[in-house]
Image (cartoon, rainbow, N blue to C red; front, top):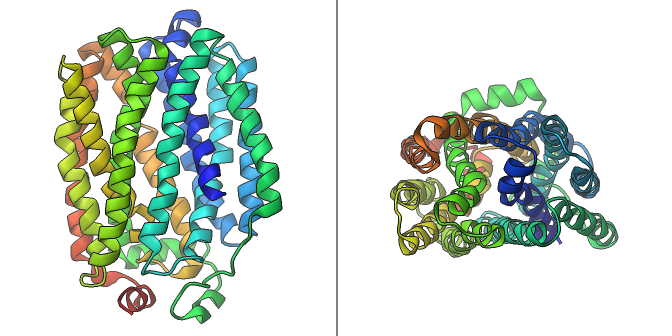
Length: 405
């Protein structure tokens, strides 16, 4: 059930990028204004994330997931009623507010079903919903928009989310907090406030390094998700449906394979090395950087396709362990807060800046070269992750005890 919500979460947010060429033509928006639409979601999502995490640690997680799904689904459907840049930007911000509740609640819930021995694999399986939703959002939005109108994708995805929420309310079961830990009594600890979590992050440098690395990795991922459909549409003269499908399908299928491999490898490696999950992430971003550059700097469609698939695979190695690595460094009672702050740093520092910055650079250098420049950010993420690996001893005693038990 959570896989289904994750699918809708990303299908809804991805849909608009496949209709960028129509918005450019019919609403007379330039690349920077389109980039603003991509960034506006990320800004609201990032700003709301710490408050969402704070709430998730204190409220029933099932309620947060259901309420968020219904809210953002209706906002998605309402996008069909707009026709101006400012109203599109406002609704993208509003949808970001609703979607901010889902991941802290879902990840916290799944971590109470799966202990350290299976956590990476469980979160990796859920992560595949992100890839499937991205593909569906990219292709279906382009197909519907080209045959009917750019407004129809938002109506269809919004209605699907509202209906799915009814099933979720009836059948989703919430576990007790800390149920999968080796020492369940830890779940009785009160969740931290904003000040307490800040002190925890200061005392645990690995937390800050993991969050900074996520900002860098998210920067790169958002650039390719937002701009690749438009790049393929203009550079290779594809129609909307094919540009949306090509921009997402191979990369996301590659990510599914990478996520499965990354979850399995990390769960095995962490039994021998405390920094096992982080080292898998570091390998993912460093190996993925050349393919980010290549897919935006070639005129060969075959090379584009291979590069997107390879980038997706290495991205999957990183994605499989984003929150599993973080949960190794924080107490059980702080998982919602940690997830919220991770999203804040990743989306405000990475995803919120990326679409607008690349749109501005594209005015001067062209879209392909502007996108290729971001490969350097991936390499910097690798440096941060290697630094975090050296500080793996700073993880909480409880997490360390559990992971080697």
